[in-house]
Length: 209
Image (tube, rainbow, N blue to C red; front, side, top):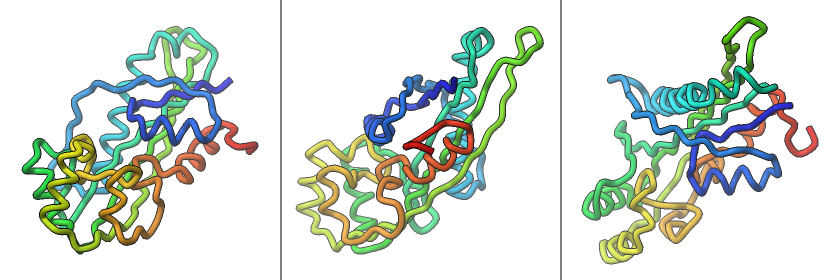
């Protein structure tokens, strides 16, 4: 029987996965992420997602080697990009304000790398057989023109402080956005359609298929 592991403790990803009605366990990665210079945003999110999945495989190694599997480790990483610059989580209030001012009235991209590692014990002693499939989902988000006062008021709600790009589409931050082209759930942190596709390809039954 497939055992699904979500390599994230993000409430948004947990909620989106719960809505699919699949059973899963949360095992977050605590590995420090390494980004190689010169990588594109798409390459960065895939690399980080794969690093998270690899770390969880290591954490679960003894279970994978002793239990019936396979284990499916789902990992994702989301980044906002604008004019070639990656916008992660703001470090402080001023950085959050600067991010939102730079995005005001403009269109930016949101990239999520999604990775599914399939890991299972081999017939030999202590071995693990792994395979991986992945994909990148990109959405285009347009902000309406924003006033400094409303940006500051939004930042003071604290909602932006742990969000890539300093906003949350699923929360109060929806008021910033005039248009989304592509997957809404991708902007929230997990492109559901893409995740379902990869999980089904890995052998997990999702919503009857």
